[in-house]
Length: 559
Image (cartoon, rainbow, N blue to C red; front, side, top):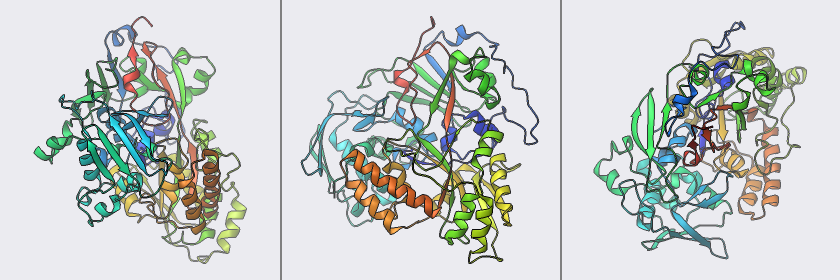
């Protein structure tokens, strides 16, 4: 969040090998990208400054408390209940806040709630709000604001794509969402500074789910006064206020001096949404944060570049994958799905096309996720076994055309997807790659009408249920293909109520292996952000998901 659904396509090699930060996890990798790309014909394109020699004056960019970073175009309005992608969430978590948040160690810590208690039966959460928590217009945040915000999220008229997935266990929320009730019975205002939330059944990770944007507080009077345009400059409670959003150009956030957790050290954060090569701009000292081109990665990792001292690899708690829709022919046949999973040579794609930029994914859960088990494994590359399975399929001799959809702007298809297409073509299949823009990709994903889809997911909080339950539980609104496996559902049901972390992780491990056996998903890569950080930027959090991180950062011109 993603938090949320992150459409991720393995797009232009440029996009993948540059790992343009959140873009990798937000927009399907493909389509347009940075101009540091490797040409499709395999020839070498020289990257300006690739030797690591800076061509500008670092001192100038380090003179002020204004951090300049590459940013992604948001895919949704700045409304917490509408966020389903990491790109938009990266801004939302800086502008808004909730009862609790994740710190730099990904632990749940107080945000607007200064404390909370949980009843012995695990059903009732009582939050005490801070007396100094203010909206950006300096009005006080109360329990009534949270009740309004949570009920607004559950209002079917607002069509939140995430409220049921993250807050659905609150008592009465589904009644409100279905129009059977006018309020959420499980949300109660005790007094101005006390909010009580009652669950329909215990859920050990509920407190983590409250860190997701759909649970953030919004200002009722602003929304009611300008319901159509309030998201242009929303009044939040977060560490930064938005003062400028120029689509395709920049987003500018300024410090909230009265932030209840302490004013940020930076005066501003400027997200550059365009402007050409990130690598060139970084080496010309136009931005503080950059990303390593794949062709230069080995030299930088080996300490042979002047940029090596500014290099920080950040493994992401995320996975990119191909979804095979079991409700669309020919993927309603298990043998077809398994055959296609066996015919993707992920290791070669990573080594040859991506220069080893990512970690090859053998499962759904990334190694950074608590509960990850190395014993979990998908199908190994085996073309002969794949051909045998297809010959046993009910579609043998009469396979329909397969369309693999990805986010992009058309033109030449991404080389990574072309490699997947080639592998499937070796099986005698007719495979077409189809590019759609990022917004259309999200719509098609939610409708579940695609055959095969290149996408991805980044953790919203560090618990395996955030992957296994959210994406593959049959009653999850984020399970867009409506995949169903009764054994998987039983394991998820037990895991979601299990308070013991080790036991819960073991249940999710069992479910993950069953999902991989069903081959409804082909895990491709666990991404890594190969980040470059100017030496004057201090306390930059190396975090594997979207959290409010910019309040920790400072710029020290003496560094």
